[in-house]
Amino acid sequence: MRIGIVIILLLFMAGCQATEEDKVSKEITKQPNILWIYVEDMNDWMGAYGDKTVPTPNIDQLASQGVRFDKVIMPAAVCSAVRSAIISGEMQTTLGFHNHRSGRFDYNPITLPQGHKTVPELFRDNGYETFNIGKDDYNFHYDRSQLYSLHPGPVAGHQGAKNGPDFDWGKTLAQSGKPFFGQIQLRGGKYKVKNPPVKVDRASVTLPPYYNDQPLTRDAWARHYENIHLTDLDVGEIVKELKDNNLLENTIVFFFTDHGMGLLRHKQFLYDGGLQVPLVISWMNGNDKLRELGAERKELIRGLDIGGSSLGLAGIDIPAYMTTENFFAADYQAKPWVISARDRCDYTFEKMRSVRTDRFKYIRNYFPERPYMQAQYRDKWPLVKEYKKAFAAGEFNEIEAQLMAERKPAEELYDLDNDPHEVNNLAGIAAYKIQLTKMRGVLNNWVAETGDKGQLPESDVGIREVLDFYHDKCQSPECQSYRTRHQLSGNKSD
Image 1: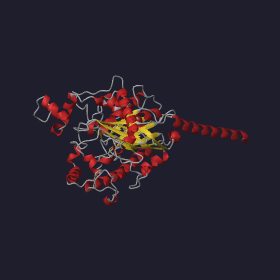
Image 2 (image 1 turned 90 degrees about the vertical axis):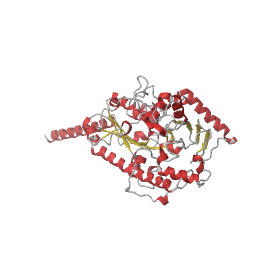
Image 3 (image 1 turned 45 degrees about the vertical axis):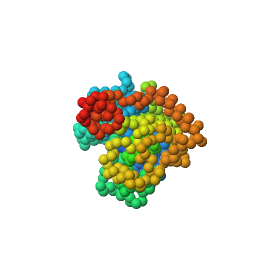
Image 4 (image 1 turned 30 degrees about the horizontal axis):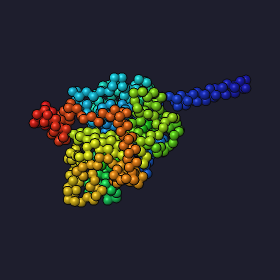
């Protein structure tokens, strides 16, 4: 009898152990959640990347557990073009939404090709809940209810965003029982906090050589560090929300920024300060899987591939109409170069393309007769007014004055190993002629193969949209020509 009782107990214990093992196995094989922590206008000045100026323990922890990417290059250096490319899985120049804040009026209906679904739509098709808290800022017409199954609301936010305290996303997703693909937008470099919890001594910061050392420029540099600390606190709150709702273990967290900080030579320009962003990805249930190609990825990575990698980690096939790729795939091949594009930003008409390799950066300026500092939205900033006044007073050295030149070189070439600040243009030096010719050819082939729509002048309907959006702020030749051709005397297009 005693032997029988022992056998029953052993069988019961074995059954319990099997049940627990099955449960763990089920949790590991279950479709993972995907969460993008998507930050505005911010560089990688954080502990995970070797900068200890301000504490960033939450971002650092994600990096220490998961994978840190050191050379992520975005397809553009302005938010709407980047966001449009990543969410569509295709370069903005290929699909025609390369101009910043385009397709916002009904008479200029920029749309995706027939049958082209966005990344969140593909997640929805595969049983995922989807949501985006914050801005969309996509340069094409779309039905938001098709992209996102859950909606924060009811307060309308910036450029198509939906914000609202009534959306308890953690609790909602925990109760759903479905896997989710979510985006949470953070203000990042755009924070304006009078008394941040960490204050950076303005005298302690070191400006790069291409900036003249003016008080407000120095202040902006220090504030960017303070905003990075604020962003890290936000990341901590998001991770806590996941943990409190038992979602953290099976959620793949992507932390990245749309482009670099908002200062004059960063945002909107194709130097690394505008294009290179931090990217950290962590998954408690699968960090070993994420690290199969390395815990510190130092190869060139396209920011465009964030969408494809998210789909791939969820086991969702990337459609043939997308060129985004999965940089976690076993057969992933590192890119020999990455292309980025600058087109019209707000009412500033411009066209630039860049080719970035591990060592070199090539930039083609299609409007060399126009200055870098064309009329732009930042002109109203006290910082810019102070900066221009100092330049006019002759306070800039030769390197600092490059950004303020009346004309741009048609081509720029930089050796990033020896010139990480991109201030010594090698395009006219005979010793670099072979390198220049090679990178020129790469760009020419890419333009032809991808059907770069930025090579075409902006249409009249596109210019009309600029005038209706920005009125008399647009003094670019394109707007002036439109006014002349349409015999307009007012600020609007009609």
